[in-house]
Image (cartoon, rainbow, N blue to C red; front, top):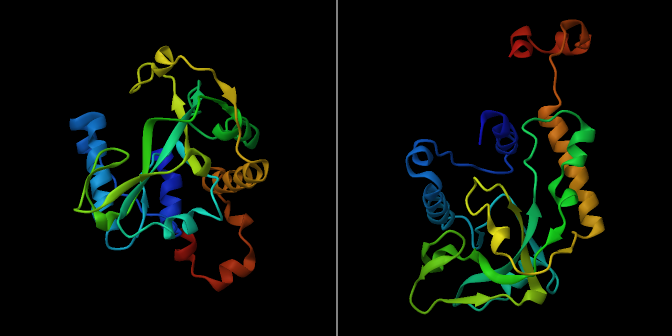
Length: 236
């Protein structure tokens, strides 16, 4: 993540919506294996504030299709369940994301969830887990590696949900050549129309607020604002 991309993360943090932990030297020295440091840092910290933790990447979206909602489903789990594992399907992502925001037209044309919809079958090739941290001792990348005594892992039926993974096809990236080993049949799938529209509007508002900015000239500042607040605050 570069400084430009971090602006939106910083915005979420400033508003109290999210927290983030930054890694720099670990990534430079360990490469992609540093991901294990991130997952365990999050895992051990979350024991003190979260009952369930979804261990997923930024290019993955959990699609829940079971009864009521996901919170209800997790609350229905027996006390000895320490993880629920979801199947995945891959969405073919062929192009790189633009490096910077240009305008709204560009943004809407590059939204991953509308631009890319060719998907593989839902299968158990890659698992993605929602973990109960107090019952799990150690993690692998997306699922628990070691559970405490008596704790079980449950596989969620496909009809109840899956993870939609927008998978890169850049051959220089990790497993970027995955399509060369794929022997299935791609088909077009989409998010629900109502959710797609809500998500599109939310992304548009957030991106424009964070990135569509310019300097404000002094003569543009309303007089009531300059009379109410000290000049030092406005300069800041």
